[in-house]
Image 1 (cartoon, rainbow, N blue to C red):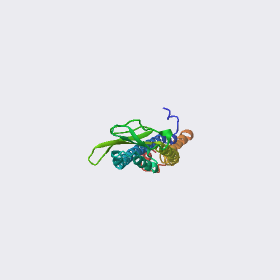
Image 2: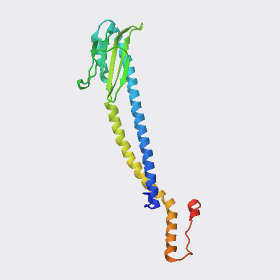
Image 3: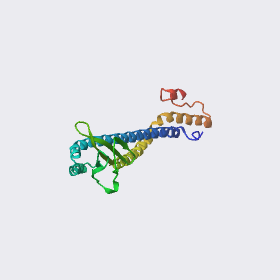
Image 4: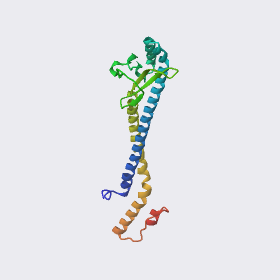
Amino acid sequence: PCLERHPTRRKITIIAMPVTASALLLSAAGFLIWDTLRFRRETMRDLETQSAIVARNTSIALVFDMPGDIGTTLSSLETRRNIDNPAVFDVDGVRVAEFVRDPAFRRIPERARGWAAADTLESAEILRPILTEDQKTVGYVYLSTELDEMWARFRAQLFALAAMFLLAGGAALVMSARLQRAVSGPLTDLSRTAAAVSNGGDYTLRASPGRHDELGTVV
């Protein structure tokens, strides 16, 4: 009912814009969700890879009780900006060595044993056993990472998609305004002809079809 008060040209624009906006919003939301999930999967995969490397490089040091060598191995992760709070625990779960990049984001448990991987909205972490060549457990390695980069990436993409949405919406508005003339033009001409016949009483006036579709048949 609310559309009945508007001319056909405006009705077409009113109908087209929500459809276009919905399509753009769904596409943008799908892309953001896909990229965020992909980033989290890659983060966990990287933690698994790095934890396996640390476990392999610290197994001998754990067997011969060399915490200094373990600390050196953990310090080598300083160049890996996406790895925070690496730590190594002995077979009883007692922390042997750790490397804290930023004390404000220290997330190292006091004791740790087992094999686990988890991620939250703020961080991701992994705990895995350290095995010798004969598959004997001699300790555990713990790695974690903050997901600040993921959220910074999310915000940047959100702003970019918002700008693209506005540009695409403006382009759709301009295109719909031009294309709707193909539909509303013949109807407008027919309306003007009918008004002229009604007001002037000249029944010889005819609207020019100018096209060969349904609208042309109506005209």
